[in-house]
Length: 137
Image 1 (tube, rainbow, N blue to C red):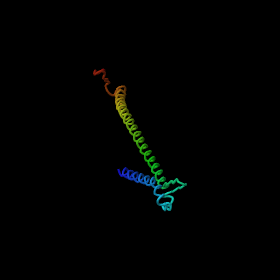
Image 2 (image 1 turned 60 degrees about the horizontal axis):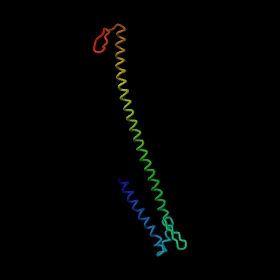
Image 3 (image 1 turned 60 degrees about the vertical axis):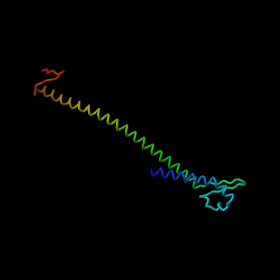
Image 4 (image 1 turned 120 degrees about the vertical axis):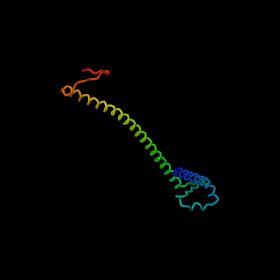
């Protein structure tokens, strides 16, 4: 939220500076002393009847703000992609966990049955097998 307000205020300030720079050539015709402002703040080019005024610092700030925007936008996209990747991996791992849990339960049942059958073959207990609800000796 604070970033949004900062960007809105910065945008308004840049628009105001742009309007000022648009009006500046007309002001320079009336007030020639503006050419004494440091060149980094205001650059004035005059050739005959043509006057060009720009602000190198405004250009630098604009380029930096575009670079900063692209970096932030790129980071947002990076984190969104990373989040979607993690989410996909989470659901895949969850699905595999459920499958392996079922397989593990079946494996434990098979081990128990194998132990019973081994005991039956060794003659330690009576052999009974359940098929379809019937006991078979």
